[in-house]
Length: 220
Picture 1 (cartoon, rainbow, N blue to C red):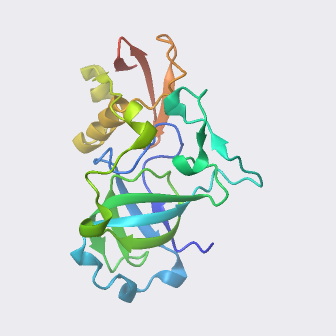
Picture 2: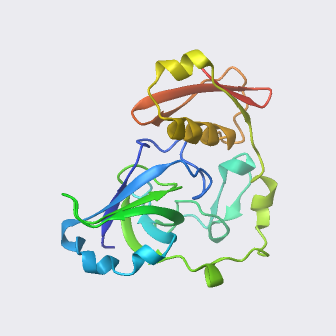
């Protein structure tokens, strides 16, 4: 596989990253092309599209082995599904697929052309294999069935962040909104439900610690 670009954002670790693209709109990211693909002609016409598909490399999940079934964390980690019925990173070809919204395109930067996007579910530095425009008249299927994911996709938490915590860290309102959305979507595996357990994820170089008690994510 050829890497054409890398995505850069505020997630240096896997935990806390939204499970699907588009769930957290406030997550901003930059797509920076590798030197040999920094050609503005390759972006001609892209400004007319609002969204793009990213094909990317699960670079932290490479393995010489694969299993025909996996255990999705959202099902408690003890129920197996066929790998083709999941978006698990553990598959024969470690390729991810994400739909993101373009916020702006810069054609002339020291890094070459840069695509700014929001809503990505990728870790900082993830290799991008390809970019394709999103076509709403063929890529959107509002009446599609969601299979086993209907059991879990509505799981949400309330979020509690005190004013003292907000004042201590210099996040922008948009970044606080992203943090709240990440917590509301409940990043925990479903087999972890200890009200005293402290969970952590890295965001913009800061460790966000939280507990979940009575369906409330409390930032500590």
